[in-house]
Length: 303
Image: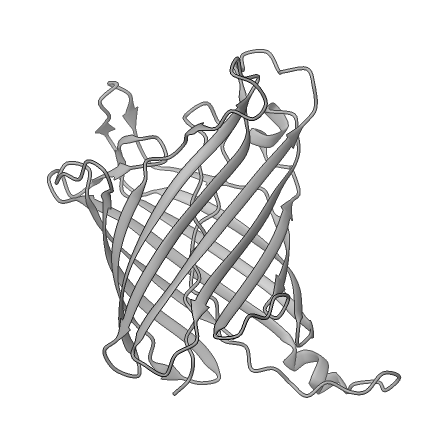
């Protein structure tokens, strides 16, 4: 049975003042690695083209369990907000069996009008591009008996209006997923996500502070119902650092609300493509309620 590795990029968002940068999750396509030539040999054009890989993913932050069908509870604000789509496009080259290098871009899209949050702010249809980024996927950087460890790193190109306004230099992302190798239909793992951000000084006018570090950690437990259908439960615990900070450089405070999520995924075999459909229920972990719990979905395709 084909191994399916589900990787979650934990989302981050920095309030309503347009400082924010978001990175969100999508299933990565399984990569059919080619046989690489010995040093000094020149691969054919066909072999080069076969080592290019791309993927598109869209996630739907759907309605609350208690509320209008056009509004969701958005943990990145946090507040009631329009239901939302998050699009992610990636294109990369498999340089070796141990390294894929590529570029990516994301866009967030509010798809409903006239949603009033608890602050009284009315939100409507909007779209916003985030900084493009260069990424490096390193599936074999760390080898531990009994585990599959996937490592990824990226840095952003700060050309978006929000980054320019915040005088951002770049945003680095380091992340790993650890999954137990097992022949059982049960799966267990955990992942972590570290996002330091760098800025020019002084602090721009109108800014009280800027997020300089975001860290997230979470376990996950899954079960394969069949060869193509699986269920998964996961959690995300988050902290951040903002600067300037009266409590000092090493003070970490609460970031996004900690969340729990249950997901059902269908990954039909349409080789050579990777296709995945998912649905989920998400709740605030420590104070769950139907007012802050949402349903959503996802779709991804890659080659």
